[in-house]
Length: 150
Image (cartoon, rainbow, N blue to C red; front, side, top):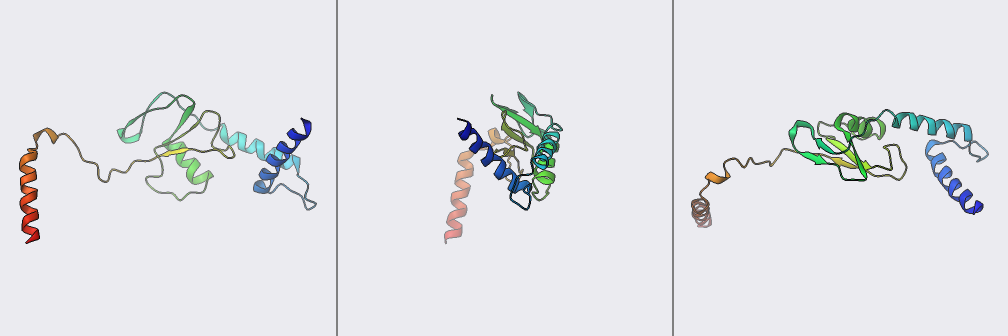
């Protein structure tokens, strides 16, 4: 059991040390540097405030009912994660928020997030849908198609 645990710890620490470059010239893990990196990541994670329950997305585009087992990070914090921490390019529609499992943070290894985005292009207001005479509309479309096909 100890060997199995040691192998798992070593595999985790090895993958982390390569990412954080915390290996000395002899190939040994610099435990102190590794612990400093963990502390830094933990301190970053503590700066975020997650929400649960019913969330009103920015600009009133929708309400999101965060499912059990998940948590939501608002648009401002999500932009910080995606652009500043993860290095994605900045744009106006980068995120309305992030949805991620309760058991992980944005600095977790091998984690995942759902980035919530909305683009208004193609949005059609349905307020006048009840006023449309669809038989008339179909007849007009058929007439136009016949004219185009001649």
